Amino acid sequence: MNSYMQKKETIERKWYVIDAEDEVLGRVASKAAHILRGKHKATYTPHLDCGDYIIIVNADKVALTGNKLEDKKYYNHSMYQGGLRVRTAKTMREQYPVEMVERAVRGMLPHNRLGRAMGKKLFVYAGAEHPHTAQKPEKLEVK
Image (tube, rainbow, N blue to C red; front, side, top):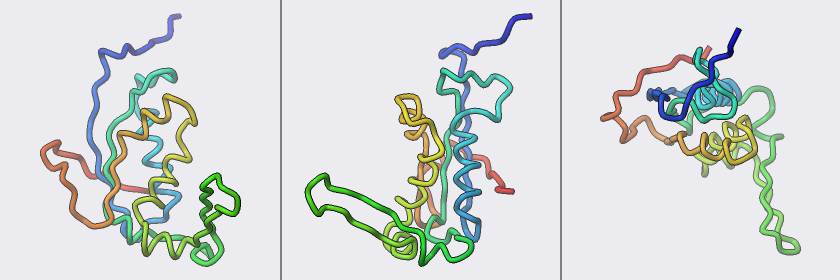
């Protein structure tokens, strides 16, 4: 029995939109990462970027469970001495909601060249509007 391996030329991509309003961040991120990798397709091939495009709207209204708003920390380092910057999830949601959602999704993708290519198909917007209406994205429910 032979396994089916999809070719780069035969990949068909669709567009999906996820409304993150009052949805838990981890569930939104895992659903988006699943679609970006292409694991929802019967033609999934691990060594190819065969996933679809994802648009996430209302990133500023995403929910966090438990005490994460005060306890969860986001770290950045400038690589200079004393260059560590620490922000709480509350600060990130108020000032940088797009970055918070992007970090959650990109953390669930492979950490290599292929994962970076998959991450380029992710579009996150703080508000309810997005400029991708010409692509006719389908609405995707997070369960």
